[in-house]
Amino acid sequence: MKLKDLEFKKFIPSDRIEKKVASLAHQINADYEDRTPIFLPVLNGSFMFASDLLKEITIPCRVSFVKISSYAGGTTSTGQLKTLIGHDESLFGLDIIIIEDIVDSGLTLEKLVEDLKNRGAKSVEAVSLLRKQVAREKNIQVKYVGFELEDEFVLGYGLDYDGLGRNLKDIYKQSSPGNSGN
Image (cartoon, rainbow, N blue to C red; front, side):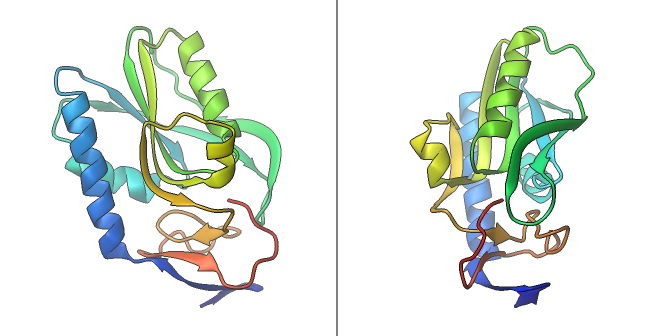
């Protein structure tokens, strides 16, 4: 499949994603059975994952949203974070579960966790469908991880390349490595 100037091949089919999402939800349901967490999906990329995950959550919970970006476009992170939409409710004393599509450098997650702790959150954990090797090397803490990746550029299931590909039900990876990022 070609999008703009890059070729992609199917990497993780939708049936594997569905099974992993159900498994992650089962773990969260068990871990939080006596609590009422607030789920905080990070937009835009996590929208499909968050929707499917939350459909499998059976414990009482709340949902809010945040939008943070470190991408100027293309496939490479700028390293500079911008909060585009923030959570505006009190988070004091709450158990928060951040929902990420992918933990790449870990910069976004580190900033968000720090911000939530500074707002008085009781606990902050993260669930991510994908985690790249660089985040593992930096020891970025993600309690619930769907799939581990090397340094591959992926799209689909909410992930995009210049706004394209978010709607794909499978996850694709770049066929011929060039710039990598997500």
